[in-house]
Image (cartoon, rainbow, N blue to C red; front, side):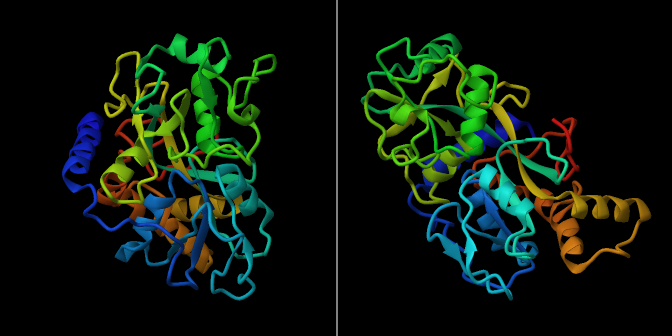
Length: 331
């Protein structure tokens, strides 16, 4: 199926289904599962939804925000620090503290790491959002957007919280790098761009004012509009970059990104060896579960395109450099 058709179909569902579907959110109600993950706010809902399917029964997806500690129901895992954002999720996975509590991390961005293996499973778009009564034009060129984030206008640019994968990807789209470049004036940014006490949780537009502009996930927008998740868009609307609809994803576009689930490199290497051997001998129960859920185009998650689309994402297109479920170690 064409990627544009997928996204437009999802948007069509939004128009007729808003307010009907029960939002899929909150921490798992069934604890003690084999695979526990934290991290990205962007992908928490699609993973929450997948965890409610038959093939996702071994998966627990813990929200990015909420209580500071979570009780996973497994021995030694009754007070695990909650990880908010892709960076925090990957860091928690690597630190393995408490030991054995996290088996994967959600990540909306890629950052090469010798200790991690990434499994792509969907694509998402990024665009800007403004309020319905905004003084910021709803159509911007890339040059105009850059000017806003260089404090060359009277508008106030907003970034998501630090550690967010969407923040890194938005900055990469605007500036070509995943952090604010040295020398860029941030005096006009909300909170200077780094104060998490005032910066919004990613993809939450409730507090956005008429003079502000913020990056927003297309997948989150669609799933909030169609009622699949709680609607925290507030009065915001999606803008058009260079006159292109944000719902028409070009898989090779600069504002289109792949989203991932991440495992420890040791687990990824063991799974890769088992695939070559053609059997699961030598894999422990966690690695067997990781392989079934994440590895390969026929994995449980990659095969569940209905859930991926329901939450506003598009399946990884055929012919992509790294297909769905392919082990990715480099960008």
